[in-house]
Image (cartoon, rainbow, N blue to C red; front, side):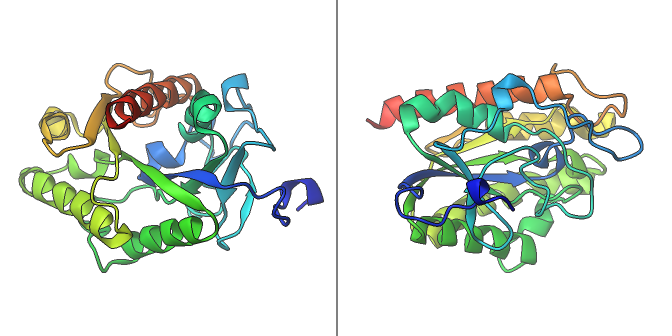
Length: 250
């Protein structure tokens, strides 16, 4: 790693407003990844690095300058590309100051795999705590998951309870009972149950939990993952939702 990417000194390590990025592949980012599982390396201006303001917690729990793909050392079994995290961070940085992104998403994961006590959940909480302890405040969880739960009626029947438990558990384990959570209503999945999962996501009624809708955003040829352009748009949706939620808490 180049010295310019390594955050070592207190001067270069400002107090951060921390955002957890979690869920499955569309949060991890597949924008620009082709059918041969290669990322094209194209970074839109909205996703540009900002070495003074936008940082990421890497797999070794160290801060570094955030660059696409944010999840390259977290979602390691798949090829990662552009997700919504960098466009979100660039959209909120002027009002939020230094941003600390905590990538936690792993592709192909169902909601039951994010239960408390499992590896995915425990790793997410561990990373969020490490980020906060290193000098920052966890400001929100950005959550995009559900495609893997559109395969059966059983998964649909369990989804609402599992997702609500996840949100309550994260707040309890981070000691943040009112932590803002911005979830995404999915844009793709098994068409037989897709709308049922979307209805559950949009119908969650928990204080400080809001939903942005990815429905209608452009999908890649796999009809599952958002394109790079759609990920940029989603990042802006998430930013708008977070800033609006912040106003209600001031």
